Length: 438
Image (cartoon, rainbow, N blue to C red; front, side):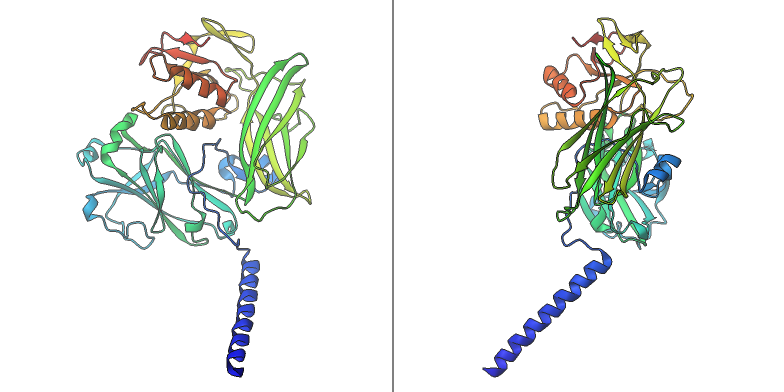
């Protein structure tokens, strides 16, 4: 009996020591107690994050230390499904005999003869060691539908609507401070569903803190008191046990870095999954004009209780007001016929924020699934386009075909996501005879 008690006591002591050791290890490495894995994220505005306001002000988005551009050289090959080497997604796999290609990738006719085979796109990149403790996401735009995504030998999931865009949390699969392998896999027979047979048009890796800005929506409107600026901000936590106090501060600045209004700050509770509203009246401003683009800088800063920057998002936008008539759009009190608009879609639009560049007002055509029999897929396609581009100032209208099934439901969904722009109906494959949305 005495020996049994001693064994039990020894087991209890070892358990305590092990728990203390694990706790010390987690504290030293700042490891979360539980990884919350959210593989495919809901649609959102894609913006680059910065660690502080100083670097956000002084650097271009692509210069952020929290951003990796994956455009450039990738390796590409085609396999029979039953002959694929299962090690293709590991870093040490020898892909020297694969073809070399660059994003954006357009499938050549020579590849299209390999129908029903598997197309693999592979890139090995270093992930910075100082990213340890951040959430890391893989962003893919205009890829093939039904895209399988692999990271370091593990298949993290399938992006069912990657032909729009997809965002994946790849944090648990990465090795920080080392090389990491990313592989995109798709069936070649699905390439025909995409205009131009594109495989991928953009790939990026974005990182941000465990509490960070998730999404935002910029609106301006005319009121009796003048021009009104409104910003909806959604911030979130990626680890469940974060309950510290935070503040979100919003400021808008001109090209001389002068604020248009006194920055607004509000308390933020990480446990509260809600959208925060910031509003301010504008008095001293310039309209955005296509021939003289006036970009304003918006900074959305997440600060801790000590007023230290935790996460900062920078975005450029212009001020404009849109009204519609039966034959034209009135933008900033100037009338533009429908024929004068540049009609674009997700495959043809080029988003940039260049000063002193001449822009054209753009009407964005919403592209929908080929098979219009699943409302969830339809609404998902709408969201992945409207939410991604609704903050881009040169877009002044959404465009849909006038013969679509669920047409009224589609228009209502677009308006729900963005009520600041009119909807133009056109005949299929014809952008010269638009019918204004009434």
